[in-house]
Length: 112
Image 1: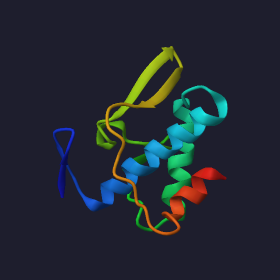
Image 2: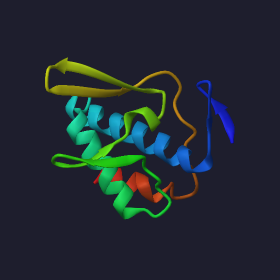
Image 3: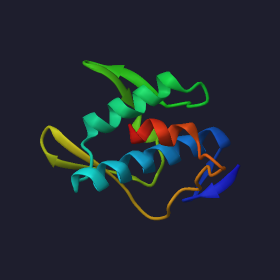
């Protein structure tokens, strides 16, 4: 474990940090906007179903799978734009990236 934003982060959590950051960065680079909460939840849930080592803190809520905000990285900022619309942003440091000769498979999944 290592210290990150005043909280202990395990190796399992590093993948959650990395994926959260990638989703936000990719969405913003394509659209010019921050992703909304529904989009972020859906992509994180799809990644959780696809990768065994992706240990997403989540639960079922009305219309589908939803991330548990309290257990997500402290660097995520959830902003209520309107009563029923939330945007998600990454604040502060870039998370440690999983870099190898071909990167982590999650990068390819987020790019699609």
